[in-house]
Image (cartoon, rainbow, N blue to C red; front, side, top):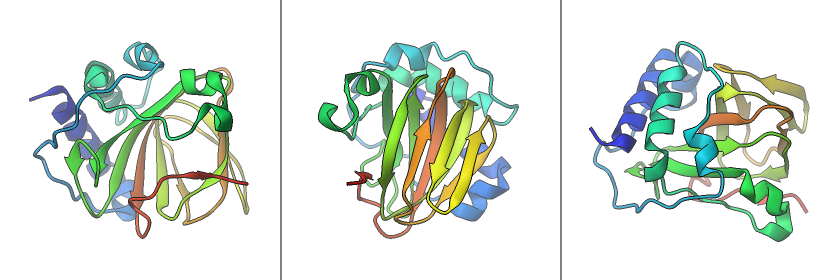
Length: 193
């Protein structure tokens, strides 16, 4: 089994063991990998060296992500003008499952995403509904119409379509698995004006 296939398998196991993930979206994706070349990002070594513990349920996915980090097609959606150089040096994600993912699905997207400590992920929104699952580390999530939430390993947090939200990492990084569903699946997040 290839590195990214192990990530897919660990993500599917986490999904099967997490009622909130199952309720958010059924597991629907190909098990045949798409031809997506690996693409590094500045924080790649931090993902490979991520050593904050997860839960019994999330640790296998953390371990698979670390082991396969070199094979991900890591992306950075934003520009330096939007978020600054420090943010870009300490953040990145890849689409494991989805229309442009390593494993194809037209019904859901599943991202592996990392943010280093001391970052402010500014207010943004998107058409798709979203479920963040914290694998390891922690962050404070802000959202319009909701009190701030500190997300820790094993916890999940939902954002509705177009709900403005932001995130702050303080003294710890955060490694997440993020699910998207619904209209706007192929869109990207947009920073608030």
